[in-house]
Length: 263
Image (cartoon, rainbow, N blue to C red; front, side, top):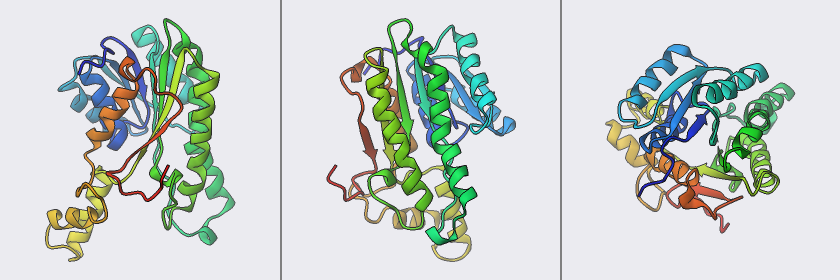
């Protein structure tokens, strides 16, 4: 399927690894010109080269910290200056620390809010006029299935990420009709973080092999496997395309059916 986004300009944050990188790759494969982002310049440069390898659009990198308002302005400015505008914003960010509620501090809560919520607030604010121009654009926020079903030990993610969904729903109304806003809620995917956890478990002797570890992580997922990050990336590209033109204000779980929520 041709997603009809060839030549469009997209900014994908936290895209030097994991689901953000998969989203950048999916967009670039469809011909979109993509600005990738990460805090570590060397890691970002490697990711840009990797995504360029099979891209049909242009791919550039812009380092920046998503908790720094000035860096966010630079990200948006780089996208507009590099490609003459912005058609798509894809927001992603790292996860806050895990742990039980009583072990969290006020600083933990403020840090999580700044990273997960204020980064999207600032990105949307800086991007809105550009996204509305030239026929309109899209916003896709990558959050977590924890907004629908709380995950043990992830109180910060369970609580704070719900604000992003409230924001996304509001944007879907206030920026319409020029801009559509949607969210994806990933479950377990074979990202570098999951790979690292499984490899560490193999070293500890908990699994005989990496494959055994991944099989264990797949338990409870109805489709029988951990997700490929590109499964989510392709969904992000679809939501950024005219092919999903009547999809607006929704939050789509990408979790292989593992959640128990009806909605």
